[in-house]
Image (cartoon, rainbow, N blue to C red):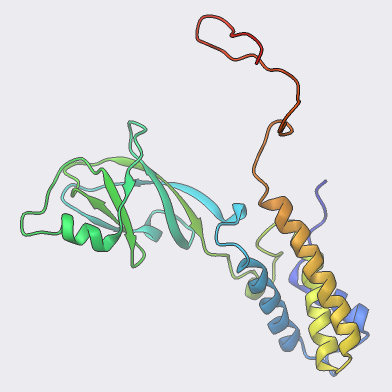
Length: 228
């Protein structure tokens, strides 16, 4: 069920409501620092969060080998994981150092790209393209700076309340109320653990049956196979 998202201002106000401390006791700048720290801790748990997935199209230029990836998308790309050509053939990834040895020679091979590498925020294609090819790129982006923008957290709503708990724990820690701080930090860790498990769970259209389940029938092209 979709929930009303908490903005940065909502989170900071919730923290003040819980701790009963005003800006004289704890300035907004310090709460903002704690909030950023909490969010970074969440994001650092996984490199490939689903909410960071992006796709875009990159069209090559004849005789150009390297392309700055952010020129083709509004997102700040962190890593490229897949490139598919117009014929739905996936280009193979090659480490850039290996590509240097194999392709960046005095007689650089040219032709339809079959390999790609990602280095220094650029996608490099090998062999060097001889024509314009519309390639579909899948990648993971960097999180947006939502704290500075003052918007909702860049991620699912399951992150909102845990961020409140984290900032509260840091406030109580600064006030040397260690016992209360530990309780809120534990609540933060528990909530993020549950959210992470749910978000990173592999997609499945039906419950996984390990053994002793209902028989299924397999399609063999012209007829159904017997129940297995």
